[in-house]
Length: 202
Image 1 (cartoon, rainbow, N blue to C red):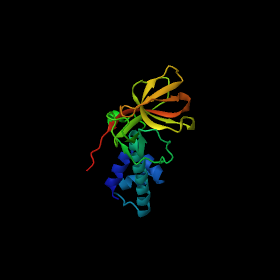
Image 2 (image 1 turned 90 degrees about the vertical axis):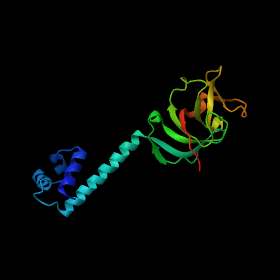
Image 3 (image 1 turned 120 degrees about the vertical axis):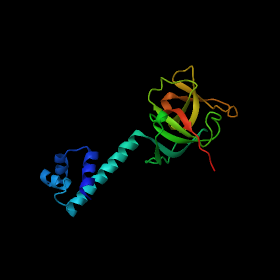
Image 4 (image 1 turned 30 degrees about the vertical axis):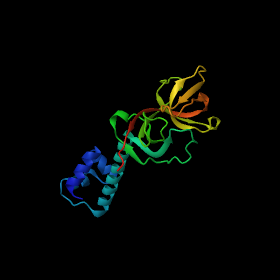
């Protein structure tokens, strides 16, 4: 490490010479001699500085990822099946696509019951809905329910039911006829499908 690298790192860190000296447990005069090339940086201090740089880099990566949306390599079936039992704790990667950066996650769509709106294999950008009394009827949602509603995990259009404690789930594909009626009380979580990312396979 040379004086120029030290100065650049300090400026990137956004700290004063005094602050960096405190972080390295040295006097500000010692730091000044390093930055102004009066003295060479001792090896034991180079290790401390490199540790600080690594810590700073990890923090920057975390902050960057925090702004992006996690992608989970999970298949959200467009059919009615059991709920997730193998959700990984960590996302596969993060997606930085500005129109969907307010979403909660990206997941894979599996099946054809929502075709042509959403095709098999497309990545769905979903945003969690907290108030189930304020929904856009006719729009598509990812709905996850408890055991009372058979542990559903499904992507469907949501429609109004005359009993306001219930919702109607409906496929977009006319080949998949028949409505599913669920109680709002059995919904564990619900996500609006805001968009999709298509992928060409070679």
